[in-house]
Image (cartoon, rainbow, N blue to C red; front, top):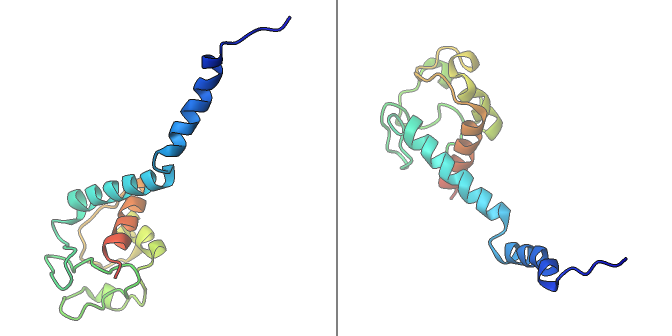
Length: 134
C-alpha cells in the first residue's frame, strides 16, 4: 500500500533547510558570539587592571596587541622580574596556560588573578587577538 503524504508536509523540512542556508552561516554567528563572550570576560575580569588602548596602562600593561608580543616588553610599564626574565611570547597557547593559573605558570608574577575556566579563556584570547590586530 502506498501512503500519500501531503506535499506541504514533504516541503516543510526542505523549507527549513533552505531558510537556514539563507541566514548567516553558523561559523559567522559563532565568531560573533565568541567575540561577545570574550568582550564580556575582558570587561568583567580584566578591565579593572588592563586597557585595550595602546600605551595606556592601569595596574597592568595595555593588552592591545598582546598576542604575539614578548612578555615584559612594553617599555613604559614596570613588570615583575618574573615577567621580565620569562623569555616567552604571548601566543594563544602561552596565554591559555597563563590564564589558567598565573601563579603556577609564572611564579613571581604580580598579577593578582586566580585564573579562568576553559571556555572563558578561549573566548578572551580570541577577543584579544581580534581587538589587537593591526
